[in-house]
Length: 208
Image (cartoon, rainbow, N blue to C red; front, side):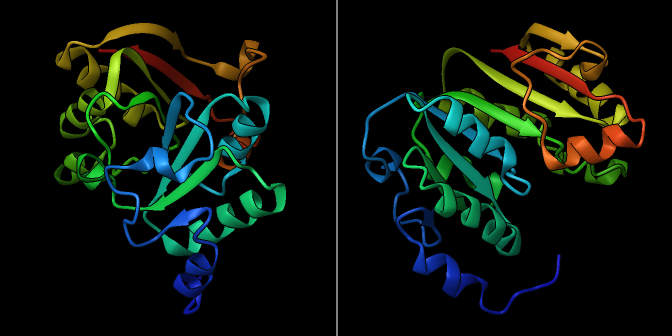
């Protein structure tokens, strides 16, 4: 996506929906009008997943985490257009999740089509590496779910091993989501694209 020099100005002008400057660090509940269960998506893509979830589940608060300010513009536009009061967005590096959220504050984590970082030397950047799993465990309430989808077989296999080694319990494994697609599945923009190319979609739901 092309760099937009005005991106930060745009996001800051929509600060009722987007936290660019860590204003709600350690107090995310104050960012919402209602105190409800809290789900977060780490890496929002273009925002179709989180906005659809929020429309379908008005009794849950959603936080979209995204590091790319240009991508965040697209997500913000969707949230603003839909007037979603139960979605808030945070411009944040996923490595800093525990600097932003409190322990045992989150009810569910979604990881959708994360960057696979295919080179071995970049393994620690994968969002299912043990370093990230440690953060999710801290911020999640007991027995809460991490839900992960990818079209990348290498990342899927890495994630299975990483989660298993960490001691997570697999609640659901699906090696081809679209073969018998659950009614609850919400397709992301990337999911539609990769599926049309004939890629299988892998899905993991696991708890600590």
